[in-house]
Image (cartoon, rainbow, N blue to C red):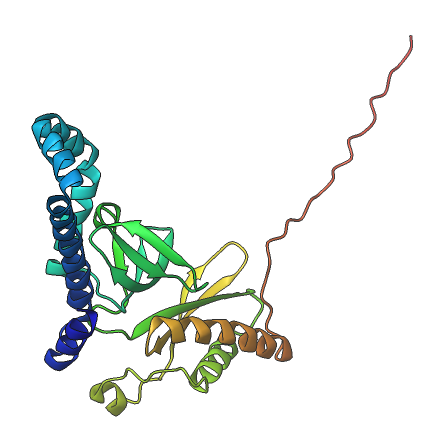
Length: 257
C-alpha cells in the first residue's frame, strides 16, 4: 500500500501532505476492519464480541467520553490537510516555543523536526489552536533584520558602509531588488538608523536570503565579521554602564556651651 500510494503521489505530483495523511488514514481503517474480521473468524473471540455488543450502550458512552480528545485531533488533522496552513516540508514556528520542519501529519498528531534534529510531536488539536508562522507556505525567501548598536561617538556613515560591505560579500545574500530598484541604483543591502537609544545608536540592515535556514547562518556570520571590522575601524559597540557619583556630607559639628 505504501509503495502504491507513493508511486501515485509522485506520478500525479500530489502534495506530500495529502499522501502522508491518506496513508495514515487508510492504515487506521485497515487495522480496524482486520480486528473486526478476527473477532468474527475465531469462535471464542466471537462469543466475547457478542457479549461486548450486549453492553454496547455503556461501552459507547465510556468510549465516547474517553475519545473526545482523540476525535478532536482527527478532525483537526482533517482541517489541516484541507486548508493547508502548513505542509510536509514546511519550516514553521508554533506559538512562541517550537519551530522546525514538518515531517509528518498523522490522524492524531504532527511531527516536527527542530534545528537540533529532535522530533517534536504535537497533537493536531493543540497545533490548530496556536498561531503558526509559516516561512515556506508561498515564498520561502526571507528578509532578516540585523540590528547593531554603536556609540554616539562613532561614525555612523562608516558603520553603515562596513555593514553593507560585509553583507554584500556573504554567499547567502539574495538580490531581491526589482528592475526599478536596479535602474535607480539602490543598494543591495539597505541599512537604516532606527533608534537613538539611551547608550547607543541602533542600525538595522535588511538582508534577504533564499530561506530562513540560510538567513540564520548569514546573520550569525555577519555579527562576527562586522564586529571584527568595527574593532579595526574604531567603531565602538557600547554596553550598558552607569556612572556613580559619591557626595561627601559635611560632618556634623557639636558645640558645647
